[in-house]
Amino acid sequence: SNVALVFTRTFELPKYTVPKGIPTLIETHGPPDNSKQKNDLYRLLEHDALLGLVTISEPLKQRYIAHGLPAEKILVAPDGVDMGMFEAELGVEQARAALDLKQDGAYAVYVGHLYDDRGIQEILVAAEANPTCNFLLVGGHPEHVKKWRAVVNDRGLDNTALTGFVNNSEVSKYLWAADILMMPYSKKCPTAEWMSPLKLFEYMAAGRAILATNLDAIKSVLTDNLDAVLVEPDNAESFKS
Image 1 (tube, helix red, strand yellow):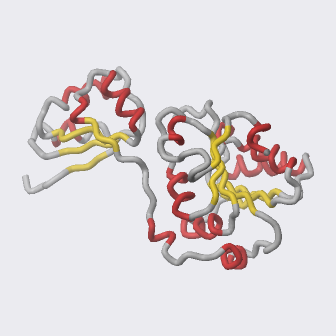
Image 2 (tube, one colour; image 1 turned 120 degrees about the vertical axis):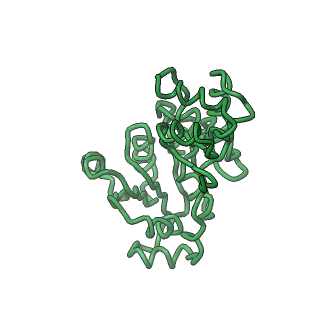
Image 3 (cartoon, rainbow, N blue to C red; image 1 turned 180 degrees about the vertical axis):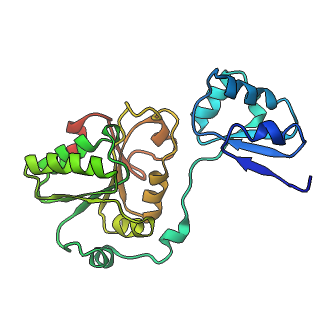
């Protein structure tokens, strides 16, 4: 074979490439389990051609080792960020002008999905407690945007807006427009123990203050009072202050 390396996130492909001796790496974002599909894959790790299993966090690696997989073949590569998005850096005023946002007042911005386990409830409590700050929720599926807009309207939160979906190329402008970037993941989030959130690294690349919850996966990257303020998850009181 003239294939130098196969890098895949599908579990089926290595079953064909490894027996042929093609060097293969497989990436996984979830924990191990005893499904036949996964166990067939784990057995392939005995082959030299399966170079390793790439995981996105240290806690995930430890789960695979505890599951009986060879430690030397479990690699950790956390999520990263495309720095190309952040090359033409804008100041706060420039970014707000580019997005037609008002210039006065502080902006607290959240970018990402609007699932219940993302701490949106806590953000809205904070918005109610801080009426002079502008709160901006960027992204989300249409049905979730509709749901939270209804809550915002019911509570009369004039300082809170939801943009709905924005193109990836616009995300950096919203991050640069912010004074504070919010990431209040709930501990109910199914991936809370081992995630490596893309938005965490985008927030860092934007160079703005970060307010996040102190989950282990977050604390493996951010340090409280050094490069972020970390608060208790699912605790609106600690978040709003």
